[in-house]
Image (tube, rainbow, N blue to C red; front, side):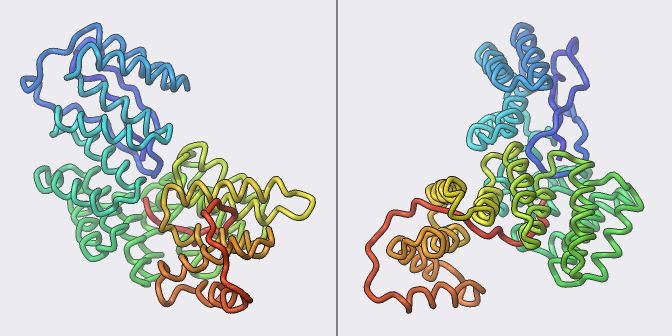
Length: 395
């Protein structure tokens, strides 16, 4: 999703500036529909600082942009545009907690502005709070039925939270209001793919690409369909096209990394995961994927890669102690690569207590534990490398 900067309330500075942020895909139009009587006139000094901050962000000077936008807010705490812009910059830097705080304050000041709601929902998505994102967008869309950007984002949020039928209904609502919308068609393709309806999904993805051949989400949807059809080569091409059309489409890069891992091209997979983390430093799936790639590259002559993988997974578990992919893969790293079975055992036990009964990796963890001759010593998870999760279709 491309999130626009806002410079709207102070008329002398209504500049058309934009910056890609928060990942995802699909154009997001600037909106200035806020009641000018609801807030006091903007402080011109604060607006000047904000303009400088936006310019710094566009020039890649992130720290300077943050400093200037904070100055603007300090001068005029009611300048919602500055809070919104700061939220965008912080999100692009991976500071999701800081971004959420600024965007929630912007929402309180300007609850009618669609851009603020969509950006806030995107931050919630990146934090894994899909139901919260869906609730936020659902409330907004109910009050603003013609808000198509928010409604399209709602389709993804509902799908990611497992509410597939509701997502399909919302996607169809977008198409009623905007027939042939490529993003809505692509979202519907992903919904039907989630239901296992590959033929319908493929038809919708093709329609999305026919409508807009440059839509990154449509290329990503087609790639996921091709992947499920067993055509890894075509899927990789579609993911690469998605990344080309939207360089900040981190999901496409994650999917490319997954295909490369599956093919044993570990060095190339590492490149994709590192590129993802440049855009989205907090992405746990990218971190686990990077650890997997590093483990695949490592051997007895490259212990540094194993140590980097161990450190990465350790940090994942610090942030998310219940992450079953990290638990399992850290156990594998200790057991098979670092030859430290006493450190692996408690991780496999935690994995077995957390993972679903039908998880495909359960037999391997159970086999390892059954082969231990004596109880393992307790170990603090300080963790290692990992196979990546399967390619994903979320926005």
